[in-house]
Image (cartoon, rainbow, N blue to C red; front, side):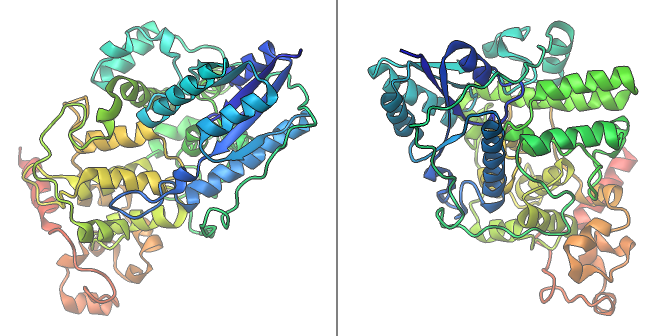
Length: 489
């Protein structure tokens, strides 16, 4: 009898550098590639009434699955699609096809680990093995210079330890893919209608028109590195807010596993040899190591990463569960132009730059005597989970941990002076005007502290606070006072 292995695709929707898939084709006569779409992944989140995965995330996922299916079909196979509880669907498929094992990528966050454990238990009762492969980070977990339980709390110490003592494994080639049996039901991809969702429209203002899938991921890497030669400028442009090339924009494909971080690393090394090695090539790898830091911290901290008290178990006193304030923040109606522009970009496109993310988070949750909103920070993290096409649980919740000052690293103060940030990164007001068109006539030097202008000036620019643009939820003068105080010190 031919040996059959099921390969369960999760957040690794690619053929290149996919060790689990590679080993499955090495070890089996027949490989059944499958993705299980769990309806719970689009169920409403508690308290904030948005789906766990919103329309932009779902669109990118469906595009990625379609691309993966087409790639497998070109190689004589196919992607099986099942809809339901992953444990039940995979166990059922294993029984139907008399599979001896299920291979899959290993995750680091609690929901995903719980699912692995449930599946392992279920498969064992049927005599089927579950084999997991660690492959979603730059450094392999077995190659770290410290055990995960002893992982440094500070990113700096983690990075220095990895740079000094760890190595990045070579990326694996595509596997040699064998045909799929003809008697297997392939299944159809879910549609927006079947999920009870409306397909999101494409907003022409988006910094980049993301399309899901490995094909687009590799094309973007080639275009950004080699065709447009933007890697050489990455460090100096990565905090900009407008345009396709101010940063690599790899995050969505990395988050869905359409692009391997190891492949990116080795392309950087090739670029350094063939084009130029400089601070920008180092800095892109630096950001990949940040991504690893959050993933390994998730493995170390477990459920604490997702709790309001965080890994340092700080007091949650002072946070407010104010749904009205939260709704205004989420809708881009805070009266702080830089934040409103960012939230509107997020809602319209599913994407937001790292710089903008940290500013909107800072406004929502900063407390410690500072008169910002102090809204229950897990709501903000959950909202990003719903909206971001590049949502990665470890990176998203890890970054919110840092801004909320509950993360493992106590030295990271992520308080942002939003006025300083806005004047530095949107000096001409182009970003705000793009996403807040009602402010189009406001001069750049009057824009970021809009509410401090007198009513006659505002009327001249077509703005009436409280009517066509909201009154600010916080007093923006605090940022000018803070800036002046800092300058004196």
